[in-house]
Length: 173
Image (cartoon, rainbow, N blue to C red):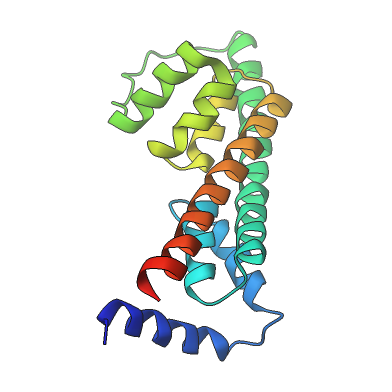
């Protein structure tokens, strides 16, 4: 027998032990975690035997809820920092921390493509949580960031969830 198919069946048996009404909630929680997000959350749900539409919606919802919280916290932090800088206090020059290659790439995309293009491309480089915070910190409007992060989350989650579902039904199982 195929070892990958055996692994998936074992995982599905494990997921089946959780009450059915809780399974999408667990996928939603997984979607809230950076690096798992909607993309991997949908994949995990499908691999666990959850309906792909339910898994995708739950994962994307969890991802968007977490991104929304990050955007609001980042927005408040940015407002406080801008207000303190304009308050006339003593400013010190600090050496900026070096940015990771992923963050540098997203910053270039933000300058080149704006929030819409960078939101759609950024999940390739770093998690949506981080990109949303970067966009708001750079001064992009909250509503615009949330709109385009939602579009990106839905597109990427739909893509990955559909691909794993097709792969499971045609190749592996």
